Image (tube, rainbow, N blue to C red; front, side, top):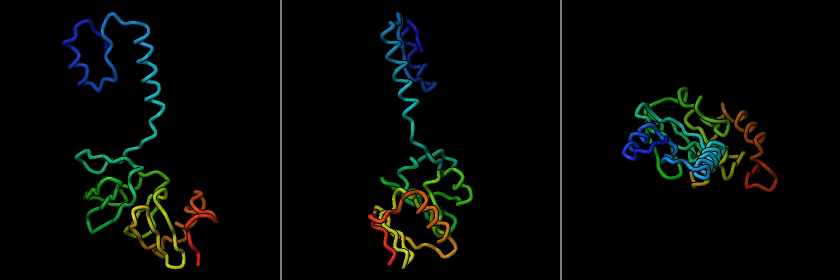
Length: 160
C-alpha cells in the first residue's frame, strides 16, 4: 500500500499487507520492498496443516507423529500436543510424503525417526517416543523408509 495520508496505514493492515510505502516513494525504498517480497515468496518452504474447523494450524515439519485415540487424533509436535476430533482419512491428504502410516493408530514423520528395530517391529522417534509397526503396514513402511534414504549402513537402524 502507498499513500500520503498516514492515517490510512491501519486500514492497509486489515488486508494482510506486506509493506507500506509512504509517499513520496523513493526508488531505494521500493527496491528494498520488492527484494524482501521476492525473498519471502521464494523462501516459503514451510507447510502448515489445518487441524480443525477453528482454523488451528501447525507447521508440518514440527509434527513428530499423529496417533488415533478413539474419535480423536493426538498430534504430537515439537512444542506441544494438539487434540482434535477427526480421522486419518481426512488428515492424510494434507500430509506430505514425509508421513507414513506404520500402524492402524499411528502415522509418523520419517524425518523424526531416530531408530528402527526390524526384529521387534519398533520405531523410535527423536523425542524418545516409540511405536510398533503393525503387520499390515510393515512392508509398505519399510519400502518407503528405505526408498526415502532414511536408512544407511551407518545409521542407528538395527536389523538383528
